[in-house]
Image: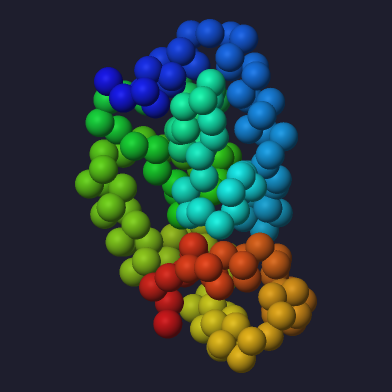
Length: 163
Ligand SMILES: [Zn+2]
């Protein structure tokens, strides 16, 4: 069993650890209002943020799922209905196999989901403005969306398939 899995097992059982890492995780998260995502701002440059739990690095979404929902069965991954790997809102997390996770990512790139907030034409407009080196804040103001949404598109975290 990997170190991360052993630590997740401890998080399932040990109340003191649960409280400690619940606080740590949620004091480093903010609500993104237009998507209702709870975004963790650990290492913002990485697509999949991790948290150190007693010196063991584990994906934040796995820790959140274990703390807020239930244990993650073997060979299951925590997937996002919102398609944002930095989100830890339990309402946005579900379990799937690795293959389902991949299929889900592919289908989300292809068709819109109910979580999608922006239309293709809006995304294309944003990408055009990014290409023209407009400030993220100005783009957000112009289209009346959050600056985080612009950051995410700019970094390729969302709407990667819309060109
Ligand atoms: Zn979310």
